[in-house]
Image (cartoon, rainbow, N blue to C red; front, top):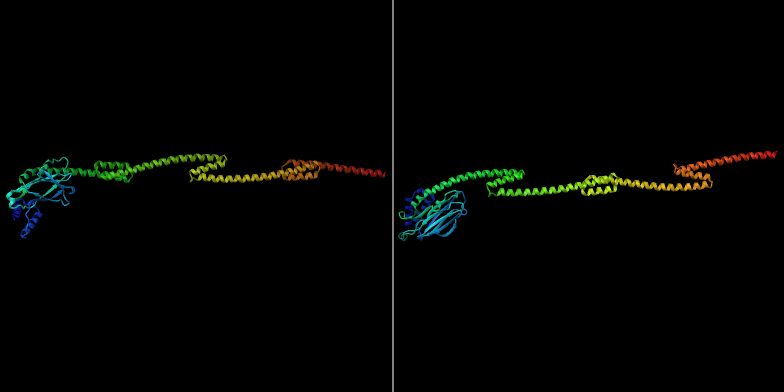
Length: 417
């Protein structure tokens, strides 16, 4: 029953405000267990228990390292609920070191030295409970006070229980409170700086986003770089800059491709124009076959162009007309040839008849020839010549007939005489 007396004695002699409702409830549970005749086996170890709280942070990656007589025993990870407990052997000095990266490391000293007569009489002591709060280790703070334990826990003969070393507590408390006050002040400064940085960061991000949506990528990239200058660890502006670099590279590639296509188009246009100029020249000079070939070459370069196609159609019509005219000329030439041959044959016949003095037949043949070629003078001249000859023959015949008649009359008169 001595351990229960120790609890009551400790509660009476300490400032009650240091205990919360949870401790009172646990005390009542212990009393109920005692009065319920629940037996508690003797213990040969002393235990501490408590909870770690992280100011402005999570409990993740918080560690407890335990030293025994200045020798490191083990390092434990504080669970998510922040609670810890540890059993110690009597007669040793322990250091409980609470660590989290970026936060102030705090230490608590526990001495388990208890007089032998006390331990032989009763070695059962209630667990000692304490709380640890770790605050950020702000840059510029003097944290040397925390190189030594925050508190010392040891056996108190008057209480016959473990208690804080009040003299040590009185010596160090002012320094600890000063360090905490300085930490709060520094925290306020850093929070103001953080808010200013946050504002500057958000303004830069907003500016970048507006320019990005407006496809003003150079301005957007500058704004995102401004944001990174404020918060170098942020991923969003980095990803946006990467995205902009990809878009700018794509734009550059598209510009180069457009320039290449424009150069190709220019070369194509110039070649097309030169071929069209040649084709037009050939067309104007009447060299339709060559012009058609040139227009076809131009059409191979620009299949969608209507002008060369219309010119080829026009050339087709002109060549067809030329063909028709050529055929007509050939037909007329053949007819003319046949006419000439027939005319020549008739003239030959007429000349032959003229030579044999078959003037009437010759005149008829010359008339037939003239019927074939009205413009010919030769048959006309021959007909005129024949007419003169026939007229002379008629005159001579008439003269001969007159002379014959006169002779006949003379002969008859002569005979009658």
